[in-house]
Image (tube, rainbow, N blue to C red; front, side, top):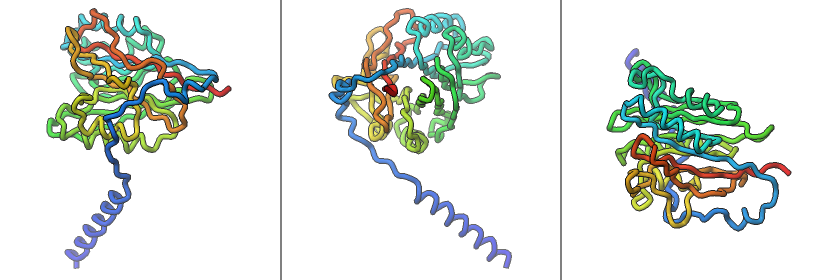
Length: 288
């Protein structure tokens, strides 16, 4: 009798799990071969008020050298973004001399900060999101761990850019192994697919436009890339960029966003690593 009861419980749990998985939304890759030109004709016709947001993505891999950090602070101050992603970022780790790097940059630029990281050397290592606008909500997700065994993360904040006008800003760095990126990007799409407000999403998706894989293809099914038709800007290596390692994308169900300046690298020779920061300017339509 006990064995029959155990068998029934196992079968019941299986049915619940199967039903849950079968109800989950499936995702199909989009068409990465065509990138929109910005602004579009519809955007040209819009004459109402807008607010321009300066977006920036920085690789904070400083080769464990604390002496390089002040240079990165100066780079962020030089561009003075409204929304900033710091990827591969240390906070209070031993190799960072216990300095809370995201908070230092936030204090220097007058920004609020949220960090989604994993425990590392007595601190955190991961992605930090900084905003000139009040952060109203925060969200962090541990992505599916791939064959490399490294925990990758997705961070997202909701910010109020004007009274009553809110948008989301998010960032990540996906796995370097191609087979591992598909479950990670689907993890993200299952979160972002539920959003009704505009979302600006930056990060290193570890794929190139010339040979897109699951990350770029699946994201292009929902997100627009802040790139010209000619292609997304190269931002590494510093000596002569040949690849795109930071993308700025957006999801805009209400058609509230206008890309006013295409994604481009912030070419500063003082950068302490081989990646130039990447920037874009996006306008948000305001109520007349």
